[in-house]
Amino acid sequence: MPVPRSFPPGTWVIGVVGVCLFSGCAGHPRAVLYSPPSLLPHTTVEMKTPGFWISSHPSPDAVVLSSEEIVRFNERVRQELHLTKDLSQWPAAVPGQALREQLEKQLEDLRARGLVLLDGRKPGASYWSAARQAFNLEVISLEIPRHYGLVVRYADQRFLPVKEGLYVKAHDADFDELQNSALDIGTPVVVLHRSLDGKWFFVESPLSSGWVNAEDVGLAIEEQFNVLGPSPFVVVTVPNADIYLNREMTDFYGFVRMGVRLPLMRFDGDYAEVTVPQRRPDGTAALVPGFMAAADIHEGYLPYTPRQVLTQAFKMLHQPYGWGGMYGAQDCSRFLQEIFATVGIELPRDSKNQSQTGKALTAWSAGAPIDEKLRLLRESAVGGITLLGMKGHIMLYLGTLEGRAYAIHSAWAYRRPRGGRDDTFVVNRVVVSDLTLGEGSRRGSLLERLNAVRIVK
Image 1 (cartoon, rainbow, N blue to C red):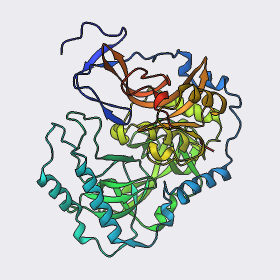
Image 2: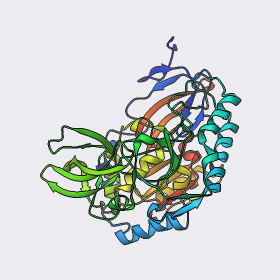
Image 3: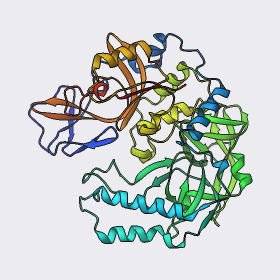
């Protein structure tokens, strides 16, 4: 590909395609993509450490919510906002008609979006007919009895029971619109249905519903399901933690992401023995010992303080972006989920729903004055525990310095205007940035797009 004759210093060309910015898709058909330097505009090396933000925090070690208050917070998200689910309260049976209608609507919604295959071809009538057939709707009974399951390996959760993706734009491989979420080892699910070929389960997890590979789930009895319940347990405090099947930690089983909790059997020096599910040849679950590095986990949840949240957030700095959990990574909302899960807070799956949790400081309509937004952030937002939401994206507020507001977030790209068009800078990782990022572009800066500020308390 020819290199443009002029482009911003410290960058290099990586492609010429349309691009998805943050969680939404947009682009210019001839936009040039650049890889930005490690330091984004208006940031310093020191800003890439939690200590920088902790040192300027008014009360970094104040407990925001006690363990009892966190339980009530999670209950409100479940019971009042209906944004997460407690699967231990799942009824013995649910109406089959409701599931049929849910799947039919999901199929029609996808079809109406005009998505394309990776090579740009538009799926024809035969594609959608085959997809409906794969749903196996005709065998759904009047009542669907409760069947528990346990995820046994990192599992993609899909909107259709297929591995092939659908996209807003051709060759946009990193943004598969059929990718709903991803489930970690030990995630409890309720299995509601099976695809026509038997290779996929439609499951409900605590945060989302969708199709997962049947081989990634072990069918469980209630006693096994309940083992993953209360204490004692450990929570993962690193971006990815390995699980082994022997004490020597040489027989690798899989990995789990930050915030995952697993039942604790015992600590023994540098390792901990936990309980993990395996899938037997007959498809049922077995609970077996797993072994993890003690440095990767914490017994029980961390205390909910700004210091702890900031420390966990910066452990994720430079971790790659992954739409809906693709590639074992995390998007903007999953980034926040993982951080807050370490202190026991259960945020919902997507950025729109996360922007409904906690205490609202304000909500802005389009065109709200920038100065008003900066004033509110400076006077009322609290670093480390405040969510900054906008259409298709969400961030964790860090603080305001010299008139600039800063956040840490998992981002795909940002735009910068040049010569009558926007150049696109592919970030593809967790970054620290100020909220003027994207200023002057057709889409506007983060601050211009900001419409919701919520404190997680």
